[in-house]
Length: 274
Image 1: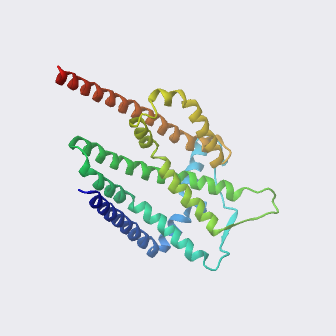
Image 2: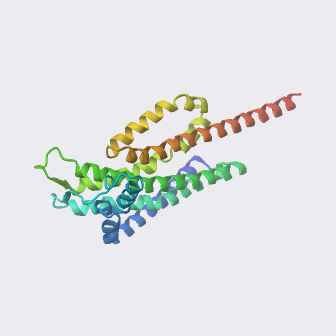
Image 3: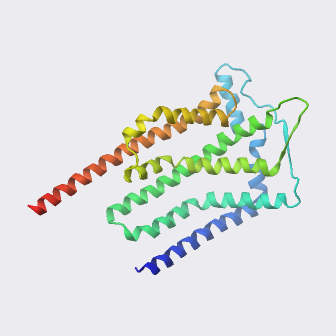
């Protein structure tokens, strides 16, 4: 294919991906009652599964009702004439993006596959599946853990009992959607480490050397995003630490493969020269 033909193929890849996102967006827009009442606004309810799980955990640990959420002490309000409509559009777009993400990755794979060798196609296809799983796990982690913990903490935090929390709708929606979407992106950390290792920018030794620094950063983020109790901080920080460790394993495996491939290449070149 010529350069212009590649551009044409890329254009259609972007068009098909955009259509998939728009279709997902339209579906979310139509299913407004379910999307908002059962999904987006669900973490505002004290009966949300995360709060019930934390309460059960607290009882199991002998902490009584310390981790139980009895009621949310804040209300939502819309103060803009077009606020609810544009909130509906934004939530629909984020939902469409999440729904279409696997298909978008598949389109990207279709675009790059013709330029790969047979053995590379298999590995890239596996990476697409792996990236999809990591993204969906991150979205679930953000929605069921980070977002509810953040909502419960910031929604109930008061500097004085005389000051009530009345939260703007767009502020609440921004927290839920941004936390959920960006956590899905953060969960792609092992793949980022994989590509950085292949590019020669990081090594397993480098990642192990700065492991303690990475863990400190993770603990600080967990302390900021969660209520001030150890259990909530561990719930958030442990999976992120596990992702980092998993990234080290991937980097080590990738480096071994690269060294093995270089050894084979050098052996072939030496044999050809001889």
